[in-house]
Length: 450
Image (tube, rainbow, N blue to C red; front, side):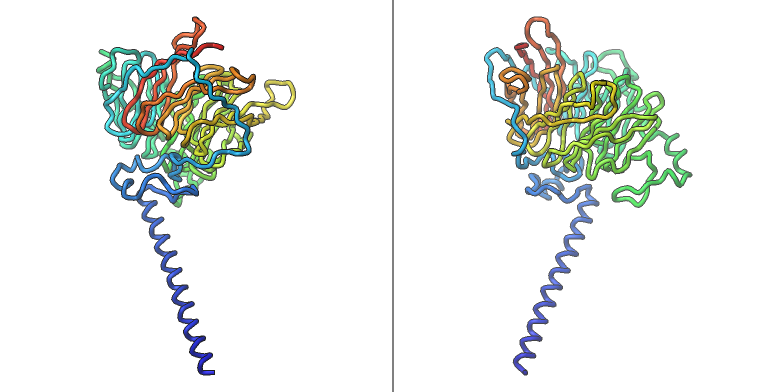
């Protein structure tokens, strides 16, 4: 009996010790997550280790800490084995491409691009917005036209206004105040969204307060995390903003009043949004889903949820006619979705999107997409390269990878494309690519029609 009691006491001591160690580890984990949230980081939901260490994050600006709130957008994850491949490698001697120049001037990574008239606007992670002449040989270091308090996540042009989305949860509207010369033009911040009127009118109403992530309550007109993407309706009357706070909002551009806020539109950070010509709004999220929204009875509602990606969706692009959607994710694939409607009525509001295949070739996460024409799409990746895809060359419904544009030394974060000529049997395009290597490259691309 004495021996039994001694063994029982020893076992109890070891069990209590192990339980105590487990509790300590849990407390350390909670403390680490709490500290990470304070720094603006969230634990990565990706099964693979993050490609940046904690020390690397601490030595850089908080705007460089992650591409989405799950820190997974630069990671490459397993591709989609069940989705058929639509892509064929076809390096054609008829495809002419060259890098015309490299634009250097930003002191932090280039996160957004926008084209307007004869100008190229670039935004960086330190809040700088620079303008460059669009055509060579006038390239120089560019001139700073605006500077916000947070990293620039997205840029759109609306008439004489420049609208920027920032890491500090705000949207800023800039208007040109000096047009004496293109190089010396300056912009003034004329509005910060939400506007003073929106904030004041929502302040005293209980119905204006909603529960938000990492905050107890906040008025519904505010984003409470980085604003990751902006998009304009076809007529420019509405501005859509998507955020890592899992919401997206709709603003009236005549006075920048917030009309709607779809809280918890996704289960994780929203990384991309795009609007088709017929008014459908697509949002892509770190929750691996793409959601489709449409305006009905003056309100936007969910009409479809697309679930094929195995990891965070980083980029979206839609064809000119709105019938094809391209989505890029951390799974290294670009999915091609085609629109299918019930019945023969093109005005049928019930939308169905069917995935027809995947474009494969990149070796790391897809970070940006751009549609150049009805059958030409470009992609930028964390593998430091761009790829040019053309539809219907080798197979009727297939895509051929015509060219791989290499030259960047770090991931390609943003793209802009301008078709300058399509009358000589070729698409002649100017391609602009912004990268984490602090530069913007300008490419000339000539692609045959057939």
